[in-house]
Image 1: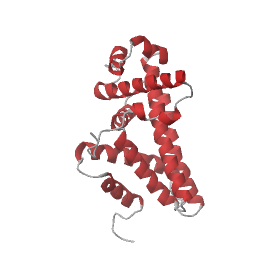
Image 2: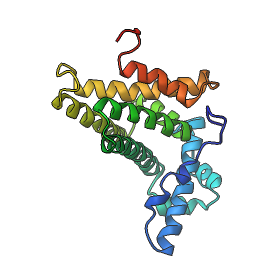
Image 3: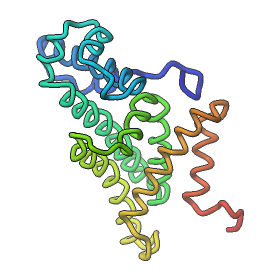
Length: 223
């Protein structure tokens, strides 16, 4: 259950709009989605090392050979899972910023819309988010470079809006764009996980409102 009390959308449903054409391509994509769903759930529950290909296949309801047909190894499956999930988060952030800009909003409005989009994503896919955050802190991982790349893709979207805000004199030129973007992404991740783990009675609107005040510098209550 999510903080809303609704059943979370699974990884299997995360990329339906991007399925390749054709019956064969659609079937293979559906199988890969089942494997993503099984892998993210198991790894979030018991860790990467403790999760076996046999368990992934069993949870997905497919033969073990099907896992290797779609992914060369468990590590490759995990790397693709990271790309898959963070890619969807990046797309949702970008879409939120673009829609706000098209509606005539400021860059701060765009950042605020991205904060909400991040919360919505985490609320829908909590298992993936928990897994992603856990892996950020692990060392000695074969897919470290992949994790760094996909993380930077999401942060770069926020950096772009911050940079445009500075250029348009909407934001201070003194801000460190890279660090500020990372801080905003981190703020959303940590606040959302804390919300789900310790304050599930709060609504998404409550959490967004609190982060929005931080973003807009209204914590002190002064103009």
